[in-house]
Amino acid sequence: MTTYNRIKAEGKAEGIAEGKAEGKAEIVLAMYADKIPIERIVRYTNLSVEQINDNLKASR
Image 1: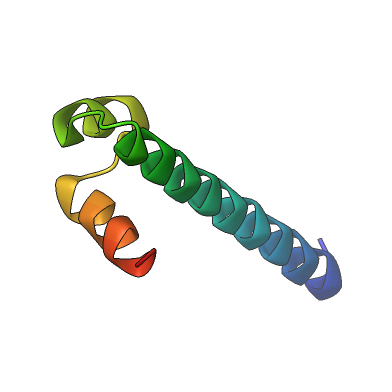
Image 2: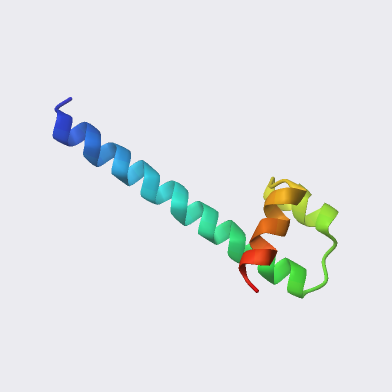
């Protein structure tokens, strides 16, 4: 694999990971807005309580 292709693949992987994280953040906010308990949000998103709280704080 050339250096260009390796860097391109790494950039693509990073972009996909960022997109997934943003999607989970949106899901957390929607679930919280619907008054779903944090424990259930943890179970469905596989995020920690701390990560969920960070998402909630960032949205304010």
